[in-house]
Length: 561
Image 1 (cartoon, rainbow, N blue to C red):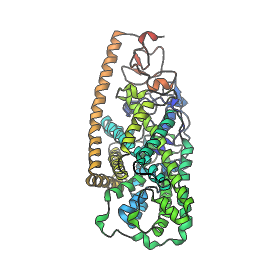
Image 2 (spheres, rainbow, N blue to C red):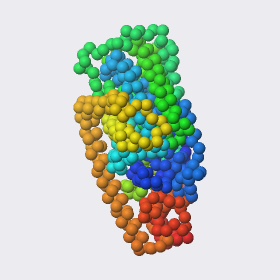
Image 3 (cartoon, helix red, strand yellow):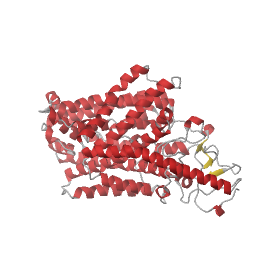
Image 4 (cartoon, rainbow, N blue to C red):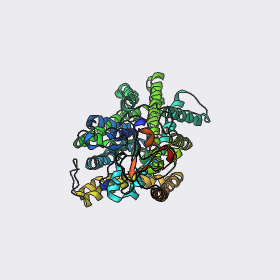
């Protein structure tokens, strides 16, 4: 659930999207670049780039920068939605894989052992670097652009795999109410994907506060279930262990536990909007308490009412609701699950589409103009379609396979972020940190070690128990450096081409750069202007010397003005 906070952060339109970035990585924020805030293409980032821009080219005017408006209470709800927005809809598989005691340990302790250290790390690094680029900027600052690209790559692949989980969960619950043959599941997955693609291409999205409202509504059947069954809670059912320890599916168990509390680092991408950075920790603690309570209450009733734990499966909440109160609660669980999964999938698909389209721009490093094409509604429809095809292909995999690959890639990125936290404490101890974890470096390393160990175990168990997960994770990791060097080669080719164009057309002249209309050009009246000598975005001016511009058309269509 790593990116819902990004999706709900703002309701900015695609027309405001003016990214200035390369491959999902900031050009070089350490060199006093004059540019807009950098990010991975989230909607919250969109508004930050566009508002207060100068000349319509995405360059921030510090004097006109808008006042930050995100209150910590809103951030608390965003954190809750990001990490636990789907509620307990996947906990059935976790209980089946490990039985009640181990499942409850995960539900009660993982938010604090794994989620809370990530939240505190996010609080410190986001306050030190309050830019909407989030973890990409942290890694760039600590280890340089190669590793910044790698974490952007890992998070993007994990996001695409994560997307495939939602049609699968949707179908699991839908089948609890409507009896369907086995062959119909792929068709229903296809319906979910196609419907979301159409809504996204048309620019019709469930955004902002509406997404939070939908997520809160999705939790309502759990509260009703608890209210009805609370009188029959039997605490002795909470301590049931599997008959044999060898029955525990550790890979699935840890993956689901990690997935349920993942996503706190994604809040770094809206940290630049927080009105009081010092209160970031307040929001995280509040979110942890909400997660702990909202997960434990309904599950405590479920374990008492449904005691054949090995028979739990995806979609079992609908069955439990039927057994508890009848058809009406079964339908409520099913509809809530379907609405929650579809709304989440719809938002994720849009933000992921922007990320891929950003990477495909010339200044994104992978010059694939086709992927930057916009529909008449100013949405990156080719990028969205490409991801939809990949997501649908992944939806044929089992839920366990998907969640293990997803959390393994996310855990790799998380380990890199933890290393950046400690490294920056050592090499930049005097960096301004409006919020700083109240521990020196060695105690801090010890404090985050449980989360570090859980991330490592997640990778080890997933890859050792599931050969498909092992293969997909290895391929994804190996392709990261390949994509980096391809990016470097393409960027060098562009630079040489631009230098030749500058030599052929000296003086104050617009230089054609690409034939396809990139997102930045389509999104604003002006175009991005980059100084060839400094490679820094500068305000669009008729007197700016020796600049290249991205636009569609031929050289004869433009003059130096």
